Amino acid sequence: MTMGDMPLGRETRYPEHYDPEQLYPVARQTNRERLGVSEGWPWHGVDVWNAWELSWLRPDGVPRVAIARLTVPASSPFLVESKSLKLYLNSFNGTVFPSSKEVVNTMERDLSQAVGSTVGVELLGVDEPERCEARPLSNAVLIDDEKTDGRGGGDLRLSGSEAPVVETLCSHLLRSCCPVTGQPDWASLLVRYRGKPIDRGGLLSYLVGFRDQQDFHEHCVERIFCDIMEACRPQSLAVGGWYTRRGGIDINPWRSTDPDSPPVVRLRRQ
Image (cartoon, rainbow, N blue to C red):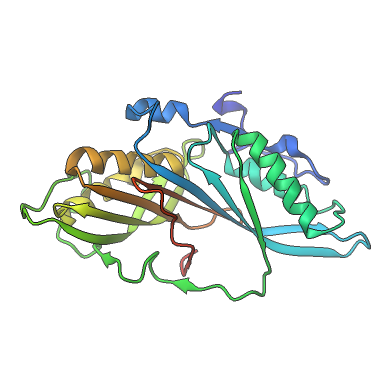
């Protein structure tokens, strides 16, 4: 299958009953070859997907609703195109499942088969309290008011200080575009590192330069990770993107030199 075969950007008919054939895998290999990391990529990571519009039928025909949290390993050979996931989840709407556990088992089986690796699925009740934060980590330093020329595309660079630091930086200004439809995708970006200080104005200018970048969320985060590693040579690095939802789904890629987990938090803008 090619990019032209995927349902994204095309008029589609929503399935009325369970249909795992809706899932459309996209190979990660092509993007990683462009980054020069097709083998032995320099990160651990996951993609956390939150699906806010999941519903199915109880055996008595009464609908159930839930929020699905999907955890896709960054080591999987494929990701799932977002509209195909939406169509797949909508195929549950008119389908009877004996229990929520069966819903989880079904989703884990289908998604794992689609991406070529084990996917975790957790169902959350829609009335369960969810923390909504301004930033992925409350102690992250916001860099959006740093001085820069505003044109974007600036060079990533060190600040000139030789003293190493441990700090977490955040920007709400990451915008990229869908590689198929050209529609904008917005995100809050988190950069956590240990090493010589990164120039914050240069980082902000670099991120602004992504405004016309056409690529999937996961690919954008991997490019940012690789570019920071190449330009700034930190001793450790983690980069995460918290994207606003589209079609009832938000995608949150996380890449790190350490096998740590991303903050599990819902941002206010999501």
